Image (cartoon, rainbow, N blue to C red; front, side):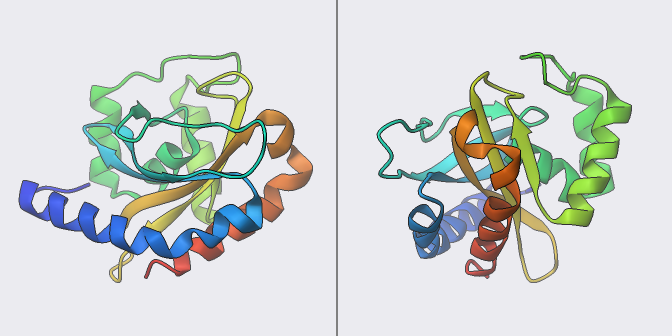
Length: 178
């Protein structure tokens, strides 16, 4: 995603500062919200805002999660350049972490087409059983992906009936970062 270390630091810092403007998403969705970027082939949790729910999903800032089994990671795969996507596929396996993890390229490629078309990705317990998330890309002025905003919660609260509502909120939040 980023080719020069200096550019990477500046972009991540700027993205983090702009991320302060999406705290309203926590209130609207009443779920934990995270800002992630691609880092060394994984999705890096850059910042996080916690909700007021008694039971909530909390990630560790600085943690890296697999790209292919997380909604923000799949957003990156869907919106990155063809060459970045191909390079990622050449150096990473689609490891199965749960029964719902996508572990074959044809299925993943089909999902990426749908993610680009819809503007958001979902994680249906693909990285961690019992946890789901909905993510949308943060694009720069040139239409290139800089990161992703995601809402993460216990699977019961990211049920299919709520996915569309959360997707609309997350997509709206990314426009506040531009």
